[in-house]
Each structure stands twice: as C-alpha cells, then as structure tokens.
Length: 303
Image 1: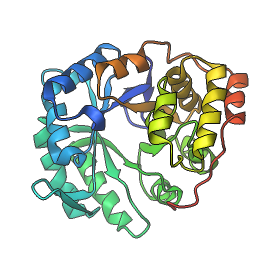
Image 2: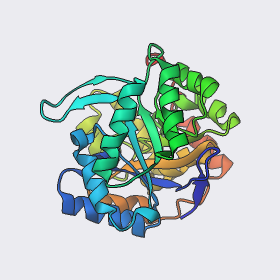
Image 3: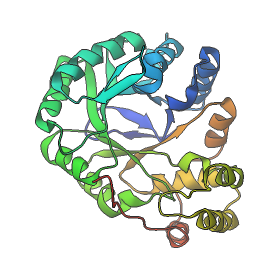
C-alpha cells in the first residue's frame, strides 16, 4: 500500500489508517482485525489513552507484540481520566502530558511512540506549555513526532503558528467538508499532514449507508436533514456502487491528506475498506461532481 510522509518527519504512513477506537474489548477479535489490517498493507494504527480508559492501548500493545518495527503507532493525550470511576477532565498541562506518556508506553508495551497527539484543545489552553511538553518528549526520543487531533480552525492555526507539528487529525468526509473551507490548504502550505478521520461518516457513506441512515440519521447529520441524507445517498449511489471506495478516495484527493482513518469492529469492515485500489486517484471531473452533490459545510461552532 502506498505510503505518505508525515509532515517534515521521517515517518511514512499508509494511505489508510486503522482507527482502533472501535475494536471493542474482545482481545482475540481485536488481534484478528489488527493482523488483517497489517496484512493488507496498513502500517499505521491510531489509538488514544482515553479509549476504554486505557484498555484499548493495552489491547493494541498486546496485538503488536513482536511486530513493533512493522507498525507506526499513534496515540493521544490530554484527557485526565480515572479508569475506576470512568470520569475524566481536560488537562493539556505539561506535567500531565509528561506523566501520562509513561502510562501509555507501559500499556502499549513499547519504549517510544511514533506520533503523539493532543486529543483536542481550545484557545483557553496553556498552548505554549503544551507545545513545550511535546518538544521535550521529542528531544528525549520518547516520541518521534507530534500533532493535534482537532476540528477547531482557530486552535489549528495557533499550533501552525507556534509549533513544529507534523500532522493534524481532523474530521473530514463527503458529508463534512468543513476542513476544505479553512484548514486543508493552510496545512498543505506548511507541509503539515492531515489524517482524515470519519471518512465514512459513521457508516452514512458506507456500502451499508441506506441501513445506517435509517438507524443513525433520523436526527440528521451536521447540516443535513434525514431527507437530505437519503437524497444524497441516492445521488452518490448513482455515481458508484462502492461508496466505501468513493468516500475514501474523495478525502485522499486533497494533497494535504496523508491518510484516511477508518474504524473497524470486525474483519469484514477491514476487508470492505481495503479490497479495492485505494491508491487510484479520483479524476478531477468526478471529484467536482461529488462536490456538486454534497454541501460545502462551514465551521460555525467549534471555533
């Protein structure tokens, strides 16, 4: 599978990333999903300390034991949690980041993290202090590169201005084109890679979209009503009979996007997203056609 360089780092990640949040707590099932992803050419796994209150990191760490050198490992920090009470609060302080990275290393059974991300962020954060924490961890060799996971354009701009981030994970899909308006071109200009999460929009853009829209779309999705979701699905289905492929190729078309991050809770979902030529680029004509049947959404909240 094709790989793209992550920002200015020496890290190369596959054009598809397995998002591990949906793996569940069945360790054997999770291992099967991860193994299939790796066998399919995916080299990038994305987790976070908050997922299942640390258990997800433990499962990922167990699954890649003996394969660490084959994997680019991403995890996230910033949510100070208590695994016993299942409570958490936002804490992007330098002290917490430098403490929690050790916990993530322990759970992941590794001595370094390839890509470490702040799991959110606001303009009220002590941003300079947060950056300092990541820079020190990078200098120490604990992490190879760092970035942020955010959908807030103003927060992203601050990190572009003040830090040496190599990547931003942000929600981006045919139904959520907000990054096109404010962040994709900015990040591309500064050679900061985009990891597009939610490219299938919770299944609303998958091959199973009709059922998922009935199940999850009754209250709409962003600025789409239930009826608009149905109409958009009909238009997209008339363009292609493989919406997984179409949706992944759409987000990968923008040159800022290094990888599309999909979640999977079964090996069937991994197969659906890898059994086609994801490296085949959409034609400009088809790309513009897809834009014409979807909305050019804009960020209103989440500033």
